[in-house]
Length: 178
Image (cartoon, rainbow, N blue to C red):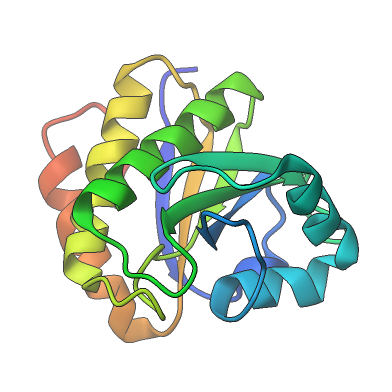
């Protein structure tokens, strides 16, 4: 496969029909509010049960579980913060690198990603977009052959920072980016 489509849309993450959905997680893997709460409500209790069985991860890591009733096979939980904490550039970069490593390892070809850390964790969306673009570029350069990476954002106003960041990071690459 030669090209990866990078798509930036405004939409409902839990309605995406993809191999994996990324969860904006805390390191205890407790599906509380925000993106995690939406995933818990739409996917059913089995996702939290698998998180509980997996156990906590370090901030900056990711974990993979089944997707319950979602239209995906997996949920990959990006632990960019501690429960009640804040996301930092380092924790977001590390957790997203781990997300894409797990996606590669589990042969995920299509993935839907929210703006991890920009909700309750308080990370700026423009910086989030830059980190996401850098992590994705590193994963694709490292051999992950995704068909489509879909960034599913809350509201049209969230798209502009992602479009700008991805244009800057991917413009010189041989990828079909936005």
